[in-house]
Image (tube, rainbow, N blue to C red; front, side, top):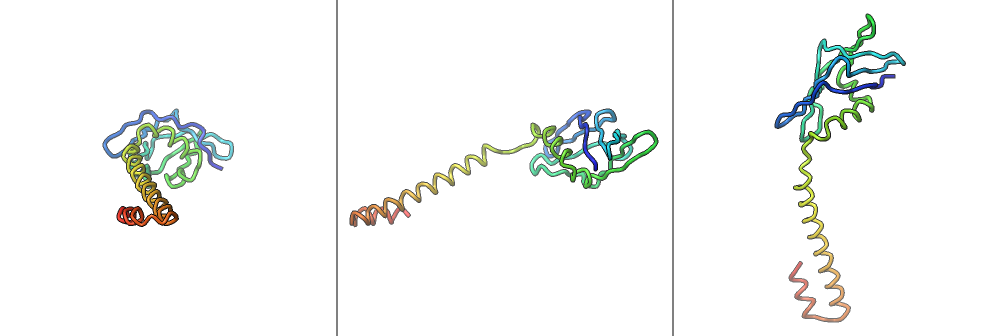
Length: 144
């Protein structure tokens, strides 16, 4: 079983679209069957995450880990199947991700308000029908 023991990036850089998590030899280790392997920057040296979709962009990356004279290669697709990895990566990058929450929240509030107003008009129509108030009924029907 593979688990991520330590994941502390060398640095985190961002641009308009992506977050780059740059890796260092001493701060990325995994455990394979209770043996600790240390990251070595032979092939890939970073994780690239889209700031808007939160998806990992470099899925074709392969990372090398070493213990003594044994080298173990792990692809990004294998890494993302390790729950520890995704959790640690999320907490490292969450402050750099663009959520656009304010726009979404305002849109949601508008939709909810419209729905509540619509339901309120329907209740008032029911009340006008119960009271046999024809004038209020026709006024409320026009609001739908």
